[in-house]
Amino acid sequence: MFGVSARFGDSEGDGSLEEYLGRRGSARSTGSIGSDLDNFEIAEGLSSRASHGTDAFRSPRRSLSQRRSLENASEDESSASAYIASLGTISGIYNDLQRERDLMVQDAERVYKERISSVSRLRKLEAKLMDLSQEKSSLEERLEALGLKDEKLRERILDLDKKAEEICMESKKFEFAIREMRGESTSSNAVESGGETASSVPGNHSSSSCLRTLFGHSGQVLCVDACPGSRVVISGSADKSLRTWDMDTGRRQDALYGHNGWVHCVRLQEHKAVTGSGDKTIKIWDILPATDKIGYGVGVGGPCQATFVGHDAGVTCVDFDSSHVLSGSMDRTIRRWNLEHHNDEVFELSGHDGAVSCLQFWSYALVTGSVDKSIRMWDLRTGKSHRTLRGHAGPVRSLQFDDRIVISGGLDRQALVWDIRTGKVIQCIETSGQVLGLCFSRGECLVASSDKVIYVYDVSSGKVLTEKRGHSGAVVCVVQAEDKAVSGSTDHTCRLWI
Image (cartoon, rainbow, N blue to C red):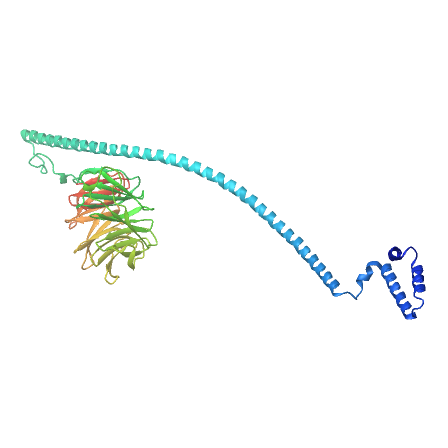
């Protein structure tokens, strides 16, 4: 009310509202009562507005513009609240990203330190490998020199044995002559030269001489093969490697690596070799003839041409011809592979109740031996086993067949000769040790025995013809290559024999 009185005082002069109304009334004395009442209502309304202050704006009689202003103000308040909430969210996200960045920086520092440490360890290992490589080369050279020295010593021993034998014969002759001079009776076993025959002494068999000892493997030699045409000998070992040798000189030509398990079997034909390993694979290798080799240990052997994968256990035996490879495994199956279309398996043969330990095939004829003590004969055209040979009392370890007979050897210390037409045993050769490997040619059967000896038997009579001694461990494998024999042993060596 004081504000309104001031406004009226300012416009009309000093005085109260009553004075102002009095003056307005005297000025309008000629006016109607209605107009005075109207003026009073106006004044009262003004007074009322002045006395209530901002309450006038809360009247329900608001204009459209006022309502719109209020609505806009409310929207502005909502927008402000949303803006404030958005700022809070962004601030939280920023803090989270900052923390995540700090963690990543810490991880990066840790990875960097580990990387530096790994590089340092790698450099140390490289240095050690370099030292080991140099030491390996030195040991190989020393091993080669020791091998040559061993061969020379053996040659000297053979010469001394011959001289001792000559002296013994001269002594026998001299003794024979003395007895004649004394008129004493001479032995009926004496020959015209005055000596005794080798067969006159019980248990004495002529012994074939060892031409060369082949050093190089660092594990047991598990398989060997030889090809007279290329003059190459190849061996596989528990050291997971293959070695090739010159058949004539015994010099090591090459070392082939690729298998991740023991090399259990190998077959060699001219320039191609097939191997089977405990790593469940079969590999095809290109082997150069001995005459094409350049130097020693330079890796001139061809690389692995193909790898066949399919067996569920280690591969124990292989054989191949110009178009197919056959493999036997500890998973009790035989598989045939296409040699031209690598890794194209033709089919699988099943029938043995144990691991397949040996096999040989020719054309459509396949013969397999197993630790289940049986031998099976198959027709590769049908994939069926048409005959089972039973006679061994232990696992069958090796076999070979031709168009007339099958000879099999087992851990029961027997080598059995079977008639291929009737399937009956026609000869049983008793051996002093377990038969770990065998081969036969020209009526003679060579048996690799666990007692460190290679026995040569006459197939028809079953009698021992000669013995080949020299290995210091069990003889695991033996093959015949024209005029020479090759053997492998647990003593880590191969030997060439005549």
